[in-house]
Image 1 (cartoon, rainbow, N blue to C red):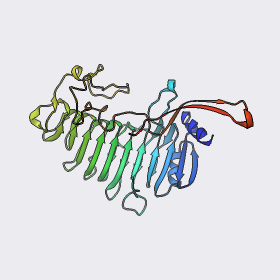
Image 2: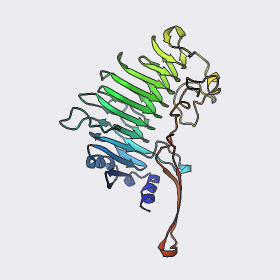
Image 3: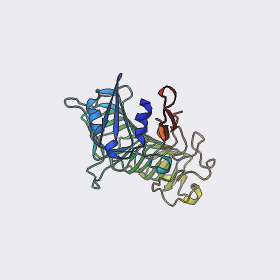
Image 4: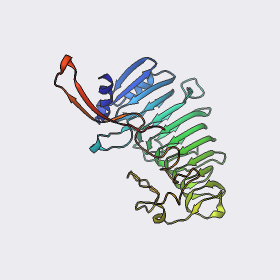
Length: 334
């Protein structure tokens, strides 16, 4: 019953009922309210702890530890009992006082299954990675980021997997990105890229231009001269500017997409960017190019279980047993 009671809280949308559950070794602690994430982070060890967030609204905070933070997803579907975990405000990740870089566990820092937005429309807010030395092994998985994502420090092994970035990834403030891997994701803009960035985009959609790095099995709005691309659909541009084979240039939207797509603007509709003929537009691995093919096809359903329906029979049964029926949904990772 304890597990069901905690999970059932994921169906709450009232921010006052928002909960953050901290798993620190063998100890479990629960924090409540809009600042629950802040309190859980303060109570966590320097690395290795897990914070699980219910649905609801949480204030962003400054995180100076290596943690695995798991939300309830970013999709709101009241008909099916799905509610998002929302992080609001300027969210910073930076070293602890006196430390040169964020402490990292073997798996690094992982942010999973939540929606981030900020009321600031002028580029001051958003998500910022900061520090004096490169930030290592930082991952966003199945998140929707609606404000600028700004690594303001050099990064190594930065990953966006099955994410949606409806604002921009702003790289102007850091020196380099070593192994910045974007897979199964949608990104509106990769502005201000550095010449020495090592960026790999696979089975993703980039609405605007890729200026540095390599793209495979993806859909790009444009590609700068000299870009490495293989098996990509490039909506604007000509073959003489791109290095690589098997690409498609300047096709009609109606020839590519199954649905009525007229540009690469993001839509929350299921299967919006599905390919009309996956055999014709197959990538290097034989699956369709874009976000629905590859090793991590886009799917916003969290890997952690979500209770989509729960029915509790409060009638006392034999020996005081209460009957609980629950429907749980999760995406497998294999």
